[in-house]
Amino acid sequence: MVTASTFRKELHFASRKRLRFLTELLLKTAESSGWRIEAWAVLANHYHWIGKSPQDGAQNLTKWASKVHRESAKFINELDGVPERKVWHNFFDSNITYPQSYFARLHYVNQNPVHHGVVTDARIYPWCSAAWFETNASEAFQKTLQSFKIDRLKVFEP
Image (cartoon, rainbow, N blue to C red; front, side, top):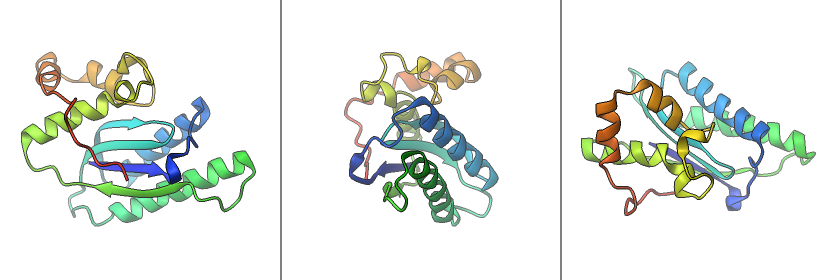
């Protein structure tokens, strides 16, 4: 699981155009780096994603994050006319090894826009995987995930 926050939690991605750019960049760059994304949520000041690492492991994760952060910072700094502004604080990754932890975090990422009060139904938020998940995951798997409570789940946000 990967989580990243903007510097000082500033809402740098608080528009449809910016959210679309960051989401597409995140997904495209992960795929080209060999990661298989299973859930994602991109909000105005942070993102989360869960994925399976490439065959050779997670060695390219720092390179991946650097590329995403560099390209997205350049994009919004150009939009705002503020060159060299620090946009990203850092990223944090964790290796999920227990099925229960995986299911709870997958559910958390899908529901992240609801958790932060952005929407009341994550399926209507276009920059997260909830709608994709509802369409592509089996009903049994969806019910399994929904059984994992996320209200007490601690997810580190740098």
